[in-house]
Length: 463
Image 1 (cartoon, rainbow, N blue to C red):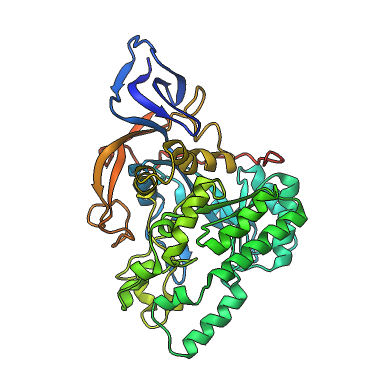
Image 2 (image 1 turned 180 degrees about the horizontal axis):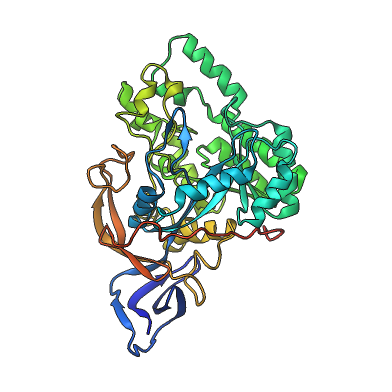
């Protein structure tokens, strides 16, 4: 016997319709009206939306950075994700310079082992192609790592040169994987940063003021140009500004396989309204790219509505204010870059997107689940409500009121970037591969149940 969810409204990226969903074991077996009960366990979803589980394609759990480590590990981070309606994440393994990518993959598998509460995939951050790096990339694709991230920022730490980027793009043109680019002109930004420090400008707000939108747009344009020359697709992570968006839109208008994501912080927070404490409190919003002027927000929402931007992820990389952000109290360059968001993505985008008329309900499902599944080699096992798909389902109450606060969130961090935000719409029940893992904000299952996802490279199927 299976699990029968009835009387709800199924919402996919394509359509909205009343239907029952029959789950047998870990898999969806049928989706249609009138499925007979036949002894199945019945869940009444009257008044609820049945959504495919959310997919957050950009997280940093248990990640070393700036002399410390992100506050959420694979247990606390994935538990918080599940509570918010996300049933799959794609995190980042980091290749140390001078080492093989296999070492990084093994390290991140160990970080997740016995801890992951939901299913997870891994991107590979490439810092050194060396003599065998291109072959390493092919090896990673065979292990289900179907995407690689390269940095055009953070010189001396993560940044790689254009030749390395171009070689990696050429390799993915052959092996079918996808390059994800952190696009900022790191060399120019570093000059601006050093000039600010020399002038005694050390407060957190100067992190934002030394990273202009033109530096992002220039790097996006350069990344797309290199991808075009290599004959490869490219995916721009955490796009934050209209200037950068214009580069992606122009490339897509020319038919290039250029993709991009943005994050809730860029859609909802601004430098004028958020970093206005004139104190070290502003360090809570130090992440990269930084907060932008409010005038960028409607342009990003417009990009989501018209498919110039395909995905909303979080770039979840939390550092506690009290004992981690404080490392940069006298120098903004020493503030660990990152903020928490994995738990609230679905709530924020539903409320500020759907409820406020910026995007449709179907587009909400697309940008939070289906599009990342398609782009990152998880579809149709993930991101779909269809026979044969994994039974990753969220029973979403569109009328549930919730106030976001560090006092009640499950993330292991001492503040919220969205403290006091009131949202309408929240996950009531969350199923991961057919198992009820969350009910009314409480995680019900055990750590370590999440599985590593071997993702398929898409090859030429990008248009």
